[in-house]
Image (cartoon, rainbow, N blue to C red):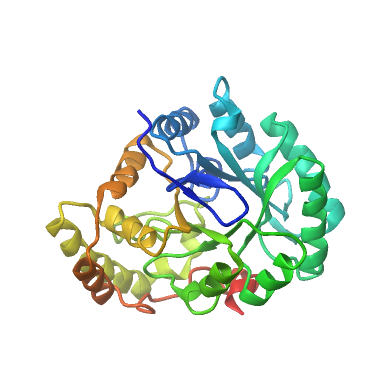
Length: 334
C-alpha cells in the first residue's frame, strides 16, 4: 500500500515522494550487492509510495540504469520520477578520469541514458559535479535545449555553491539541488540552502546516514572490502571513526527513548529541516528500506530537535566527507 506522502520539489512543478531511493550502492562503490534483492528493494519502495529514484550513468558504468530499467519493467513509467546524474568519466577498469559537462557531452550522455532506461524522458537531469572547464551557463543551456525538445522534464544540479546556483538559475529555472546533508554534514546551511530557497530550488539530500556511519549498524573493526570507497573515507579511519561512533551512541539514547532507531532519527532530522528537502536513502535491502520508511512515523518535537543537536552539534564530526582529492572537485565546498 502506498503510504509515502508527496511534496513539491522546487517551484517548477515537480512533485515527488517525501523520501527518495538512491540506487548507487546497488551497482557500485559500496562493495558487492545482490541484484535480485536490489530489484526487490526498488519494488518494495514503489509499493510503499516512494517514487523518486536517483541513479547516475556512471554508477557501475551503466549497470545501475540497466538495473533500474529491469526493476521498472511492467510498472507505470508516469508514476515515478527518475533523477539521473551524468558527467563523471570512467575507464574500463572503473577508474575515474575526470568530468565532462560540455554541451556535446551532456546531450550524448542523455542519449545513452534514455536507451539504457528505455524511456522517452528523464524527470530530473543533472551534472554530478561542476565541470571546471565549462561555464555553468553552457551546461545549463545544453540541458535547457533537452527540456525544450522534451527529453528532460526538469533541470537539477549537484554539489554546487551559491554563486553557481545563481548563475545557473539565470539561464533556466532549476528544480533541484542534490547535495550531501546530514547531522554531521551541515555545511549547506550557511549559504547554499538559503540561496536555494531564495531561488525556489528544492533540495534532495544524499548521505543522510553518512554512508552508513549514522545508521546505528556500523561497528568499529568492520572489514571494508576493496570495492568499498569508505575504506578511503576520512570519517571511517582510525581515531576519526572512534570519535564519530561516539556521536552515534549519543544519538542512540535519544532514539531509544522515542522507540525509534538511530537511522530513523537521523533521517527524520533531515526531513525536519523543511518541506523543500527530500532525503535520499541508499537502502540496498528491503529490511533497510523498511527501517528508513519508519522515519516517516518519527515526529521530532522542539525538545527532541534540541536534544539531537546537543548530542551531535554542527561541526562535531571528525574527518572530511571525502578524501582530499575528491573534496577539491566540490564547488559546494569552496
